[in-house]
Amino acid sequence: MDKQWSEFEQSMSCEVGKELARELVFSLFRATRGSIAEAEERYYNIGTLWYPVIEHWGNWVREKAQFPPVLVLRDAKPLTIVSSKEEWPRVWLNRLIFGIMDELSEASPDSLHPLAKMYLEQEELCRDFTFVDSGCWGTIVQALHHSRIGLRFQPLFFFSHNPHISGFLNELGFSEKEGEILNDSLECCFPNIVARPSEFIKKSDGQVVPYLKPLDGVSIILGNAVFKGLRNRKKSDEPILSAKESIARLLEASCLARTTGLFTGILPDSSPTWSSGKEFLAGWPKDLSWV
Image (tube, rainbow, N blue to C red; front, side, top):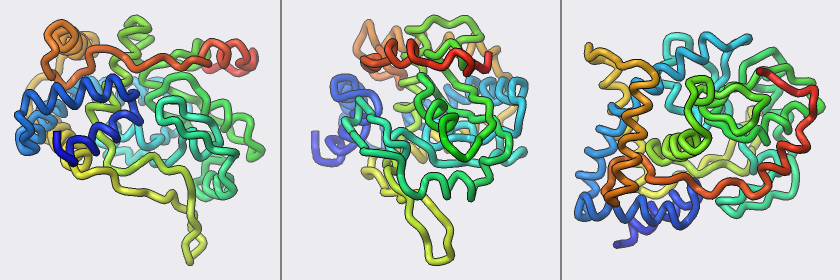
């Protein structure tokens, strides 16, 4: 593979680990014979495949939200398509900003970013809000809860490993393994166009913003393509299957990828489970629960 594909693989490895990223990118490269244009078309189709699931996830958030929803970027970004009428606010929060080690990306920040609290106040997160993210353990949820700003919020995840936080897939009855595969696929099927920010900067007008660094060219092309597929599928009159049926189609694509090695857009397996996950949940405050 040439440089642009290798850079795409590196970006994916930060999301799902080196081994799974290599398998995903190689299968796409092989299926498209290295054609970026063909890969772009495939990711457009991935957007149309995911649309019903994203629509149902958004409806679930509307039903479950006790406070106004706030989308946590980068991973909740697909919901920006279905939340356009409500204009759900978007905020940039992640482990790196809160001084939490990220095992897959091998990043080890030292502490909470000095501008993080100012950013939270600026984004008016001192008001009650529903924290919407893909999941799945709740490390940032715990960090926010322990912050000295006095935040009051309700977390809702696409998939939750944490029995104290509601998950969309969990409530539909899908297994933990299925949830892991779909949650990881959500990140790979919607390639990010900017790197996960690790710091904030203060502009001349006093506004605090995340420092956003563009990712590789292939990630940007495919990331834009999948959102185009989402938007166009949303405009169509084609009936939408139920949530379970829509998700079952994704799992069928995962099974096909696993048994044949073909690129289907859905991961054949999940990334390595967080090695400290059980320990983290064992130390979870007993009085901190939203289910």
